[in-house]
Image 1 (tube, helix red, strand yellow):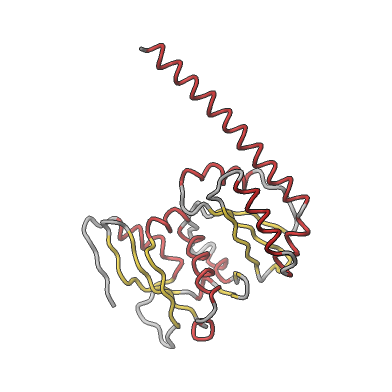
Image 2: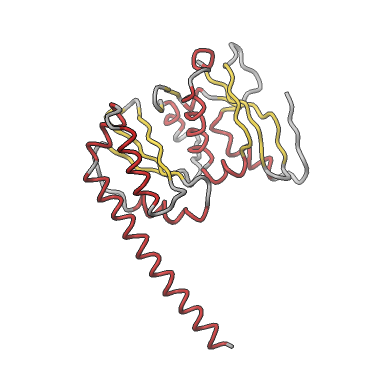
Amino acid sequence: LSIKIQLINAKLKIMKKSNNRMNLKKINNFWNWFIQNEKAITAAFKNQINHEEVFDEMNQKLSLISKRLGVILIEKRENPDKTVLIFTTEGYKSLNAKVEALVNQAPLIYKWEFEDFLNPRKYDESNLKELEKPIIYQDIELKTSELYFEPLEMNTRNKKMKILVYTKNYKYQCNNENLEKAISIIVCRLIGEYKYKRSIALIQLAQMPNFPKNLIHLYELDDYIDFLNDLNRKVKIII
């Protein structure tokens, strides 16, 4: 029996190494394609030139690594020439290793940054200034420092919560379908994609009141979720 277990373990190790080599080859193939098509990707994102065709091909290349992988592209106002490409996993932890490998194997390209949503971003007095930098998604521009939230409902039994996020220009952007996506991107960057999937049931949006009271900075959401998850009873918060 011991010999059989050892043989099975050895076989599993060989299979794992083989899968790792195969995944690495697919990742390298993706980056080779990206380098060869970098100008077309930039034109598709910045100027909508052959947008559907280019990003269909990008998604097809990523699907060879995993069909659940996706990408989001955003701009930074402080450096408009630079584009940030973020790999998404839809919150599936099983894809973490592949996304980490994608980011680690990313080429150094002057006008690009490559990120993931895997880990929450912690902020304190040493790095709060980063939240002042606008994030641009399509035609939406937001500063994380100007976003607040209010808890609507939290159930620690299923660890899902509903929140209301306040923005300064909601009354002007409420009909813009990109606003909700932009807020979701910011929340994912703050708490991580896995926690987003496990903890957020619903995000509603509202106009920031002229004299806000009892609202919480959105960048504190990660700590807030952890605090509520530590409770051993059902919690309902209703405004």
